[in-house]
Length: 416
Length: 102
Image (cartoon, rainbow over all chains, first blue to last red; front, side):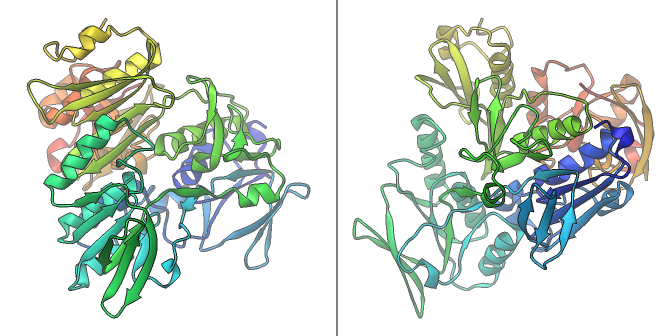
């Protein structure tokens, strides 16, 4: 379908997320002339989600979230936003979707950008806990922010020492909260980084006055007149006026699954973001997609992937085929520390950690599988991040002896 | 009020006006091809890289250390590279011309 014969066509998008909105604008850029409609159950105008656990809490005005695109752009590009409208069904035979209010919308092309939702673990008493929130949407962030800013009692327990948990801990600490993080594993960020990084962030949080505790398996929550008590299986307990749950996500695959699309750890798509139905594409966090560089299917929670898949899908739908071929990247901000990550470290066998001689706040962890550089985590060290990306992309062999030698500064030809 | 001209990779020249925010936001608002601003403007992703035309470099000024570190090893760096999310739109930069980096 090329762009110039799409006047009478309709493309529907489920999810006004980073992926969904970027796709809509990319589709116009690629030449789609027909109707574009985006549906989302969230009624807030499409916004950036990553800052919600980071810079958002420093905003004076708590209703202020960062918009993905200015409002007028949706008007000038004729992108119809249907917010507060949940989609309940995809009928791929009739090429329609059904909304919660019973209405039916027809499509020629459908894009699923449903993302993920917070996973809420089955902890005894969790449903009765007071002021307990996950952190994924603007509404969560606004409620958490309002509570901390207005409540006299600011004891916060964060369940889960992943990125969301640690970023939220740093943000709420800045607002004057007393923060305890309870992590089930024996180190924070256990699922996503090497022990070297876990140690670094553990120390960082301690230095900033956050009580970060590992091997803490939460088994129950009791609420009483004066807040909540969170109980762990080692018979310790922690008082909390506010509880934030950050233990991972559940991918929103239900609509796709009900429609009979292929699901495997996410909605399975090819290198053009197409599902196993020719008229349905899926993009962003909800997809299980092929990564060419690592030669395997992956599911990512990432802005990079949302934007890159949006572009690929838009091009494919307009008949301008480009293949997804990206090196994933991620970032996290905690206190004054900027963490940038590039690549996928899964399957690493060796880690090289560098602490720069001229600046001990600047460090990096390089993940190798034999001679192949898989990923780099860079702390206050954009040079390591950018150079790491170059090495990963080019697959150029790194001289590990030189990389380990911090007397050699990070320069493009330093580690050849 | 500042008028800013973007030259895209397909040599299109687009002049836009702004009076607040940063240059990346202005570019996104005006759908300048090649400026994504994926991280929302926190100097983390380098998807808003521009080359300032040399004659306007003094008006824009040099990058901060962090920004410079992001740019230094970029394959497409020039002597006048900036991340546009780190340039504030003010009267002082009226008239500048920015080439969108690859």
